[in-house]
Length: 401
Image (cartoon, rainbow, N blue to C red):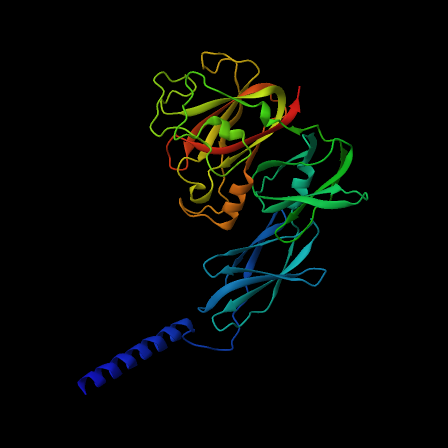
């Protein structure tokens, strides 16, 4: 009987606590009295929007301020700002004409104040500024696109190319919020072709199209039958039977190239004074104006893990020096990085991570890079934070001289 009474007491206590919890989510006093409106309005026009400052009414139950605007196509846009702020930002306006934004105060009973109409005149929208900065240039197998995004707006850069029937169709899209960014669209023949580029922001506003006719530069996948491994002084040896020839056997499974854990250079080069830097040298078999290269990580559970390179340098030379120094070499890629799309912690991968790892990681050489025959890959740091590396496969593209 005592046990039953105890259970009943616990049950009632839990019920009471839940009831109190629900009450805490509701205002202490519910009413139908609307709060006062905001006063002392000030407007600071911003690119594509405005910051509206105000004084809140003295009502004790104010919850937030809501700004709303209905566009010409009937779409209602809402923005909210907490009671702890004295301003609200509105954004997503596609041009610099005058707009009227409606402000209302909302209290804890969801009562709304009378509307206060505020006129704003946004400055030039980010997508317009970005579109004005876009540069489109011939690139190997396609076009190179660069732009400036001073406001670091979240944008999509959409690329269209002329198809077989002479119509423009979307061929690529790049998402970015960096102040300066660029990318290349490839896979086209070296004949003049019409291209178009435009910007879309997070509010689905579109910039004007920038259209141009460009003849892509010639590019070919270098013949890996001509590749040869080299072993210069300071180069790391292979380990575990994973030899350099595996880098160009068209196989990203099985064995790749692996350097020994713990190997150090007794006489490191001035460019890499740490004795545990690992690098290797490859003869491409031809001299070429390189456009890009791609390498594949060790696959499976090793992706973005263990000895797979994370940060690296790539050097090139047209002539070889046998002393293993970097005299006569040009750094083609400095501090290259393998990006993990998901950003998940070490040892965890998403489907996007796996998909990218299977496609390989591609890097672009500068258009003004010198013609080279020899490549030196320097592993700055692997995914485990040390220096040894394992790589499955490599491909190079460019124009053979």
